[in-house]
Image (cartoon, rainbow, N blue to C red; front, top):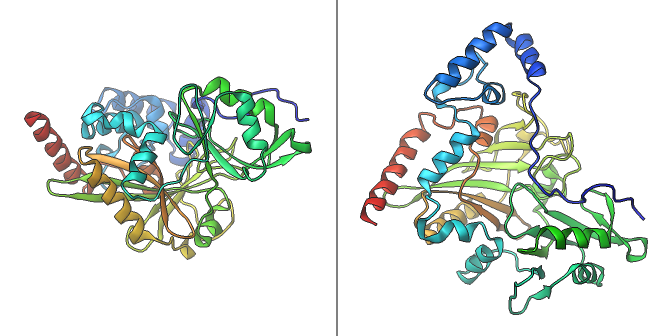
Length: 384
């Protein structure tokens, strides 16, 4: 039996502390700026209109002389990204924030409207009930479901979490049904896993079929699902695509996230052609573009993602259905039969775009469109 010395699943957001001494040395080697010059710039950004933190100075590349054509004014921090999203999609707009943070309700709503989403295989929750879906009420029920013939492989995730917290792919039984092989290849105690899920996700945990991606996607991501992130923006008369990214899982990851010391990759995608414009590993200080996938070694200039037209039409139509949010981020899996919505996020981190595209989010192309969307939101709030 495996020795369970720590949590099996990721149970909280992992904040990677920035080593300021190492970061300062990286900047010194790259630019020749000494400690005093860096300290002066950090203070200048901290008291400036954007109020960048010392971490932002290093992580968002504000130290770079060649930062972006539009200048540092186009750069936003993660905190500023969240604040802007809340202005575009106020949390109290028609109760949609609550809907989008509940993966089960989001899926039920989209399925009822005819959009492609996964149907749950089983749901754990203290009070949850869904007709036609197996209900699991305790750790013993979870373990029994996972041991049952035909249940695996399956993907599990909490109903009210993000950032890959609690999510994992469960592939096969081992040790006579006492252990479970995860998508990462790790073998864990099945009973211990079930108890961990029951103890930490009483509000709800769903088991869904394991997604198989299109071969053209798997050749760059490997078997772990790399989600297409499509960010849509509402205009005065319709909805439009603002940008498209592809999140590639890290080496050894079960989803599009970091795995241990291995970073995930974010690629900026041409919305029309599905080709990779630029890709970057999401290491803290690594600003260099990637030529090949860290997982499979495939060259990005040979990658053409399938179903681009269908994926973007899907995101736009769902945003039109929800109507009120000014901005939404859609996570879409590109399966063998077409695009599939896995999640909708009312507050995507635009810093991912900045790293992948090597361009500030408030650039000369995006800023006028964002200001127009904000004007629409303000006008509607005044009529409410």
